[in-house]
Length: 596
Ligand code: ASP
Image (tube, rainbow, N blue to C red):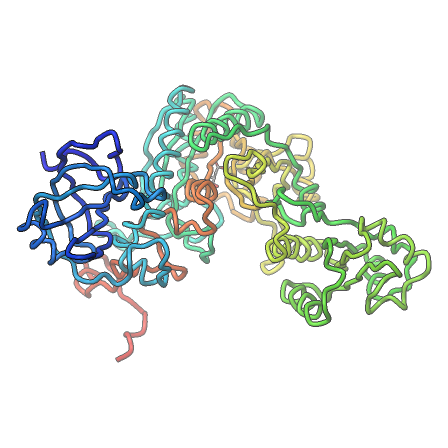
């Protein structure tokens, strides 16, 4: 046996025991001929004392110890002297009086300290990720990830779901991003794609009669990275047969409640359901943060007969005049207000009108253009009290108003600390919601065509099928999202399960029958052999863990993530391959040779 205990597991009750511990030298201090180290393993820290009294040769050997040396120590567990206990440490009442020391391996000075209090540059952290992962916070995050994934597996096992793997080398699945592709050596000029999701395979499982499937699976999407996006990410993918929307929502909601109860000890309330249109109307986004108010208010009634030129022209062209009210910010200075106007413009607004509500009236650049009625009605209509700041965006394009005010609502809540600080164990800290009743299509202004919002296999609310060709904007989908505190955690839908509707959908998306056969022929063919009604959902594991861990970036909960530019500083991926390898794959690179 190499060790008898783990460092963090010992307590005062172990006093008198002789133990063998292994770990890393976390820190070293010398005091009057005695050497103290904090020894660290994944369970925590313990103080080890090397003194001449306990063992002169061991004390001598300890003089060589430096930070991050990997060592094996044996000695006796004893209570620390009075006044030297450390209540911050779980082992803070005891120490090990070392009687032998073996250096298992020496360490060079690491590029940064394994210390919670020293922040290292992220590139450096990723290059030396194996050292970064020695930090307590990172180990806690990975332990939490493990706990969440095990809770998920236990839940689905109990519900009778099968975990089944699907291929990583496949035909592309359209989830709306670019594919990562793999060239084929055996089939010159042909490529596999890495899955953007197992979507089509899980639907085929339903055709096979495997009616409750789930999988914790990597997905790959070549898109611009953000704090909540990585080129490869992990999904909990699931699919069920003989279900409608409520069945999938029920199982998924119970799963989230059981994870939160098991892992965080929090009993969540039922998730509210918010219609997509309502979410845009009230929060300007389909992933609303419900932890604070500041909802968007419609001022078109208040300004129905207005002479204020920007509002008049917008209302005449059926646009929107909406506002948010920032509580207590009526005293914002000119510089801050100008910066807000610029911020709104950079988000896509033509401008931003601010109105400060004071005890003695309104202050605003447009104040003199307001009628007496408008002046009187505005504060109540907006829900503003003296001391508040009303921010108005008006645009002929309603989408622009929602987008700008939705973004400002989120940013200002952060900036002005409007989100109440709550403990992780407080159910109010976790504002989950279902977003439902999504439109099926969205108009792509750039390409002048209708695109799918979810994916092309998403079911259609039957009553809206008639608008399919005549008025695509009115077609609703049987899809749903889960949001939590402003993040989208999951998307899913009930699927189309007849060939004819599926063909009609491809047609509306501008995919010709030939192309549909070429890309999805296997699915359409499977649909000839008896398809059950089915649907599913796919929550993002990285996002779930990040939120549960209180991290604002999913890289903090992924062992080996990629940088913002999709690179891995640790291994140097992506990297060039040599010409022979390219030749074998029937490829030639057109990239310019590297400089120098
Ligand atoms: N395949 C979808 C996605 O990855 C999820 C689903 O529809 O189940 O977003």
